[in-house]
Amino acid sequence: MGNPVAAAPPPEAAPLSPLPAKHRRYLRHYIIDKRLQLRYIAIVSLLSAAISTLLGWLIWSQRAQASQTIRNSLLQAGDFIGPTQQAEILQHLTGSDTTVLVRMGLVCGALIIVLSAVLLVMTHKVAGPLYVIGNYFDKLASGRLPLVHNLRRGDEFKTFHKKFKDMCNALRVRAEEDAEIYGLFLAACAQAKVDESGALGHGLEEMRRSKKEKEESLLG
Image (tube, rainbow, N blue to C red; front, side, top):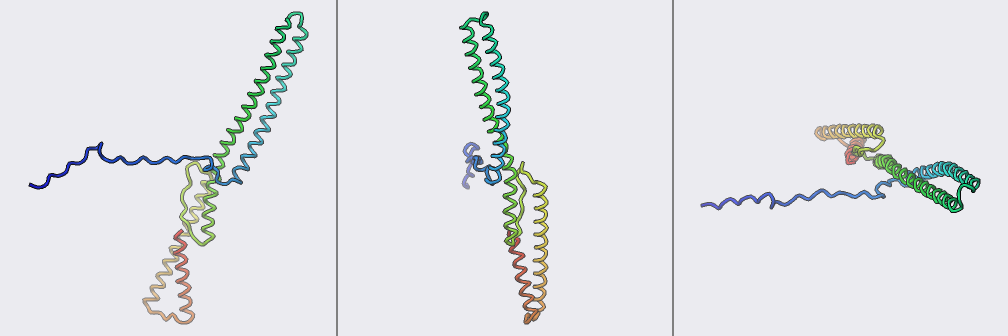
């Protein structure tokens, strides 16, 4: 009798595929261009602090005026309200004014933090595409034709990036066609055993060099 076929392991014995690792996004991941992002965050934070301070001062001045009116009324109503009650009312007014002042300071600080966080995310969506496109420009300056990939979801400059991508793709297609034409011409010359001495040979050598440059530029 032949060897029995080994039974397949039960599903629970099969090795589990590892779960994809989740990459943590730290604050430094959102800061791509420090000069651009931090400058705008600082400007918005200062403007927010100035506006919050102005509004807080207006609210505080109105409340302080109302509290002073109440104090003056208490002094004039000394015959109807006893000293103990007056002291309690004045103490309550002072504590209430202090509470309002602290709350306005907390609201101002929270507003600045929230606006800075929102602006950090917004500038990240702007600085990211600019950084990527800048790298593509560096490759173009060095004579390479890069493969342009799509931007991330939520990034800005989608229209500009699409036109830039179409331009790079058109340049790559033209370079591929030129390299193919050069190759066909050089192959035809080699098959016809063209004499490469003199100026003709120099021209063919320049064409080989251009073909090589076109092919290298397509490597990205």
